[in-house]
Length: 288
Ligand code: UDH
Ligand code: NGS
Image (cartoon, rainbow, N blue to C red):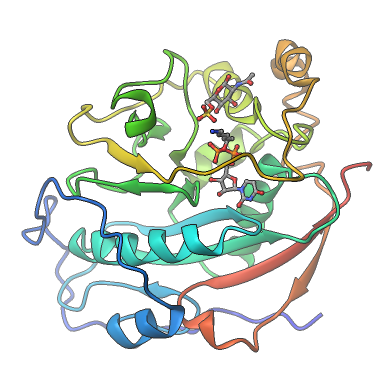
């Protein structure tokens, strides 16, 4: 298999750590809904290196972030997200690499498995302190919502327009979440068994609380997001077994997750758009 490593970047201009609160933050904003192409973004965001990595020029970022985006057949959402997230994370002085984990057509969509694959493959390609697992249809609306990992797993997408900018329900831990490498490996990642829509995020909450963590959240004002309006995806119908699976989430935790996943990878590094993200296309065998 043609494995590659993310190129080491030249030393940045500054060696001093970036400010805890970046001076470049702008606060509340609105989604930039302009329709842009990948090519346009590559031309506009000149600070992006090959494979979707960038970092601040004048200081050392505190954490190295991997943004893991589960994906299938949502190109318009991806364009919108990147066109908003790249400036957002630049203002946060983040050191970030985008990973697009694309599931091939055929098998039913399996978001939990894609997130596990993103984590495992990112670590083969580089070193990361913090993993931000990011739905493709959620656009953050306040850059003070700092994409950083802490002592506990963090839920970022707390206040989504679809739920009138409030938490969907008390135990919601979906959409955009951040876990350190240690936290994600300790909980054995996501379950791989939620085939189709629903429940994998509730299962992850069971896993993190079972390991003694709390969920950390910023204020609702900082954690606002727009969700792109869309219809239900073909191949991701609600999973009829999700509630039953959830009942035994803690029992399965040690044997279902990072340590049990089966997949095969199709590397496709020839397309131009790769400057914006590292694309990892995978075939998931839901029957294994
Ligand atoms: N995803 C894809 N492609 C798919 C399915 C999911 O890219 O076919 C990814 C994408 O990053 C998405 C995430 O997985 O943001 C979560 O998808 P989801 O289907 O669990 O959640 P979402 O809220 O849609 O996006 C739920 C169904 C909405 C029905 C609305 C009817 N008005
Ligand atoms: C819950 C689902 C979660 C889902 C949440 C919000 O009911 O996976 O709704 O969904 N849990 C179960 O089905 C067990 S949303 O309206 O954003 O599509 O994330």
